[in-house]
Length: 154
Image (cartoon, rainbow, N blue to C red):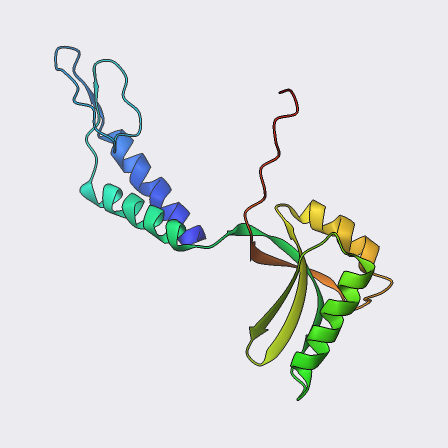
């Protein structure tokens, strides 16, 4: 991701260094232009549009967004799946307000809880569950999109 951002920043820098201002020329507006100012003609490499399209398509396939969860269990034992299901049941009994996700990332079964956009939000849950799950830790993960709250002023 860092490489992609550096490449995008470099291409934008090159693009804007080639920008020319011709006040007498009309500007054509299409959906791919980033910013159009009156009398500004932006010449950019076609590869930038291709990269932007690729980035949009890649993000549309993703079934969530970047965020954090608290991992409370992982194991590769023979009965790891059963242990993970038991851990999920136990956690939901004590903390019913948080979603629980069981993942199999070879060779481990993992139980991750919560859908937090920031590490700070995950830290609050981590501190709550630390005494019950001393091996818990915060992990970056793809989380479900948060539910939109209704407008409180309506």
